[in-house]
Image (tube, rainbow, N blue to C red; front, side, top):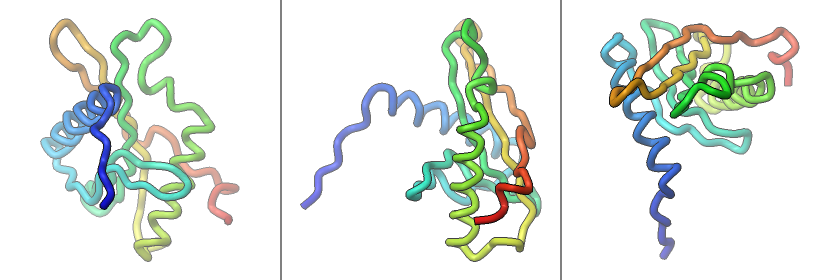
Length: 133
């Protein structure tokens, strides 16, 4: 049968910080819908519900902010990828035009021995030109 390879150290670190972000969001009342949603267009770290709003969350960890924060690493190209992946998810789940949505970024950095989480709600929005296929 198929064997799965163990996660690389970088993947293990990513999973750890995604779990940390999920715990943080749950404490703030969000409910998990799906983790690590994959489609042919990309991947979304966390998909959650915040009341009636569907939240697509990108988790970014930076050990040091010398070259920018986690938030600053989500450029225009990455935003477009996340939007297209979210559109695919909405079509697949038959939720298109049935719910409000937003894109959040959780930027995690190390402060001494503790992780520091910065949550940017509605970090970017869908441009009108992105809503057509």
